[in-house]
Image (cartoon, rainbow, N blue to C red):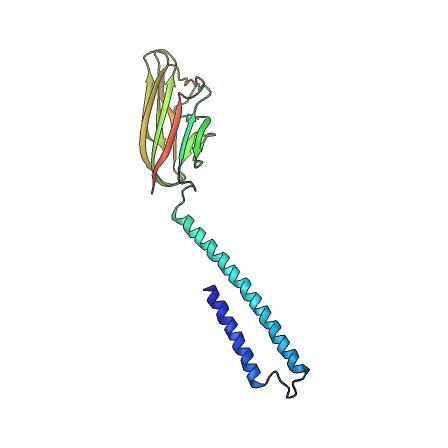
Length: 216
């Protein structure tokens, strides 16, 4: 389109120049200096016009490329890699958990897509789609139990209860759910009997992981 416009304007200017030559506008009857000066002026004007058109064409090309990029981005808001996946673990013992207090998995192992926030323990979906999550809780107090749950936007979608059978019991769960872009998922304390300590034991026992199965 831009090339067509440039060609059209150039043709119009050339036609104008030919008309002027044909009408005798450039000639004073003797082919004197006035005729030559007029011709030089028209040539200079033509060069300037062509330069202006080339600048406009390049601007149009840049604008078109920017529009294409924005359109492509609007079709899919996924991360550039197309992958969303995270894993985080607990490295510091948690004590005195309140009811519905979030469990913050402080050490990030993987965070492709940047959805997991270790400051709050929340995963926020960077793109709408179907996700799979798993979480495990270590309980280290004899004859006690602790219950936790995975929540989506504050509503439980999976629970783990572990303990009662002696020291160092581990419970886990796996959940698949759909998330809209911007929705949050996290693990929180639900209830306990006796001690509500969640031991870290150097990490890799109490964990929270998830990944995108398929984007919408």
